Structures are given as structure tokens and as C-alpha cells.
Image (cartoon, rainbow, N blue to C red; front, side, top):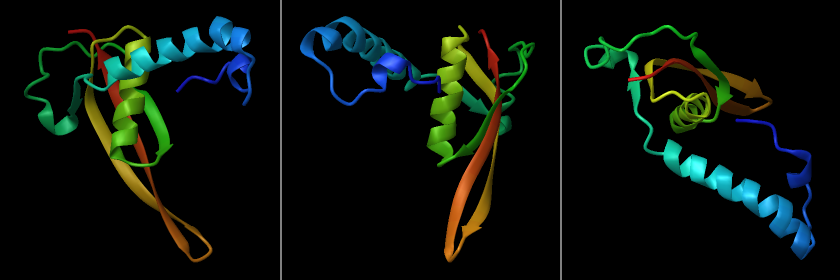
Length: 116
């Protein structure tokens, strides 16, 4: 996900500042997220469906995501921002980290953005 702009890092805004700076950027971001929710993503096991798609781009890497759905959203968001239509050959791996008596599960993933 992209870095948060400086004008969106505040917690309290005056009405005119909110309408001039915050609202347009938030509505653009929300529109993008709504587009990304239905973004086509194909895992490595679905290679028969994607065999005719050209894989010229370098894979997008996602490190330490919360879960599988988080990887899907982040891959789709980055591909959509770069102007691609789908993500293929998605691979995911989980790993455990220990913090004291807590065990946390993190996910790493990668996928190749393509234009159909």
C-alpha cells in the first residue's frame, strides 16, 4: 500500500481543510479499493486458465501480511495502480514468529501482474 500523504496524517481537520484536501483523496482511495475487491487473481495451481497470458513483468512481492486475504488485496492494489488487469502465478507461504509466549503467523506472497 502507498505511504499516507502528510495532509492525511492529522487526526482533526477544520471543515474547509477537510473538504479541500482530505475528502478528494479519501474518495479516490475508496473508489480504488472498491475496484480492487473484484480484481482477478489466479494462484499457481490455476496455470491452465492463465497459460495464454504473457508474464513479462517482474513479480510483486508482499512481505509479512496478516493473512491470505491481505496478500490478495495488496497484490491486487499494486497491480491496479500500475495499470494491470490481473495477477497470475500467486504463491503464498506462512511462517510463525515467537514473541515471548505468543505465536504469530505471518504470510509472504508474490504474483505476476498481467494485462489480459
